[in-house]
Each structure stands twice: as structure tokens, then as C-alpha cells.
Length: 135
Image (tube, rainbow, N blue to C red; front, side, top):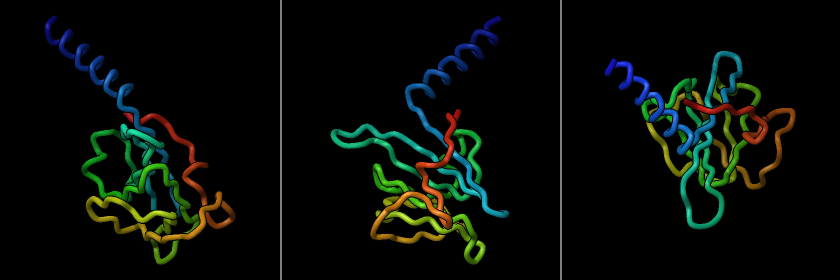
């Protein structure tokens, strides 16, 4: 009986944690290369609080967030992701340079652009991706 109670308590605690600390994920693949774009939220004094991490692998669970390689863009900075591979890599273009890198990111090439525009025939915007909650 106490084991069942402990499991139910742990599940409820984890569900509450996921609601209080939301993360959303979208997966994007071109050919054999896949990336995951994760929207996370940081408490800030002013301005927006959404920042984006782009992982080089598919992210299925929260437990993978600190073990996989990623680049993190500045707060409220969205990016364009190429719809084609260039040298077997996806091109990620953004107005801001990544503020953090973690681990090796081998299948992503980063490109700095002056003017951000919505997605076009060659790129898709991180605004246009379909996100779902990450548990």
C-alpha cells in the first residue's frame, strides 16, 4: 500500500513541477538530420521571458535536456532554420549570436543575419513550428 502511495505522490509532484516550469518542444527534420527546438521560460525583471534552445538530437523527455548538445539563443530571439541541408548540416540563422553552448553540436551550423524575416521558400521560422508540452 505504501509503495502505491509513494508512486502516486511522485507522479503528482512531477505533474505539478511540469505545470509550474513549462517547456515546449518541436522537432524538425530534413533528410536524416533532426533537431529539437525547445521553448523555455526564465523569470526576468522586464521584457520577455522566452528563450530558445536548439538541440542536435530528438528530445523526447525533460531528462534529456541537460545531456544533449544544444545552442541557446538570447531572450526573445527567434531563428530561421534551413529547409535544405548544406554539407549534411542544418543552417540556423538568427540576429543574435548564441549566448550558451553545451556539448558538441555537430549537425548545426550557425549563421548571423542582420534582418530577421518570417520563413520563406528556403527557411522556416521557429515561430511557425508546432510545439507541444514536454514532460
